[in-house]
Structure formats: C-alpha cells, structure tokens
Image (cartoon, rainbow, N blue to C red):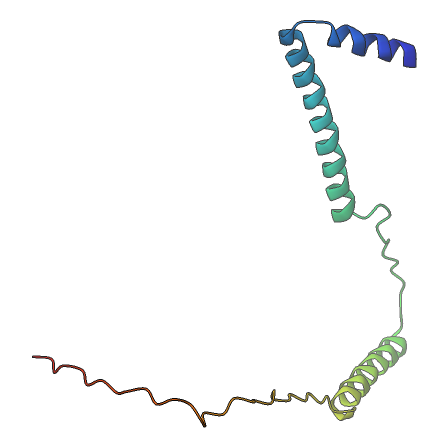
Length: 117
C-alpha cells in the first residue's frame, strides 16, 4: 500500500509541470470537498439532535394538573423573591490617585488673538 503511494508520488515528481499542476488541482479539490463535507455534517448535527426527545403524552386528571401548576408557580415566585431579596451586588470603583500638581510650573505667556472682522 505504502510502496504504491511512494511510486505514485515519485511518478508525479518526475513528470512535467503541467501534470504536477493537474494533480495539485485534483488533490486540492478533494481536500476541500472533504473539509466542506465534514463542516456541513457538523452543522447538521448541531442543528438537529441525533436522538430528539420524544414527547410522552399521558393523561392527567384535573387535580394533578392543578397541583403541578400551583407547584410550578410557587417555585417560580420563590425563586423570583429569592433573587430580589438575596445578597446585594456591590461594585466598588476607586479613582487612581493623581500626583500631578500645577505648582512650580513656568508661566506660559498669553497671546491675544486678532479680532475677527
């Protein structure tokens, strides 16, 4: 197997430039095709799950539906108030200390601008 591949590569190396370019285009196209196929497969598998969940529909009575509704709403309300009344988030911003003081600077002479006419 490997010796056949080696012979084929040596045959291409010893051939003309036109043949080398032809095989370059063929192998480049095949490699691009493989990469695009892998990419499309990855996109398809991420959009469509491999084993989609099957919805199981079972009949519930009125009491069971009411109980599950009250239970879910109570849990949601509890979580809402727990988030509101929980620990406050504190953000502290400290200003960098400035060590620039305008004292002891040489005076810059003022220049009057000409009046616009």
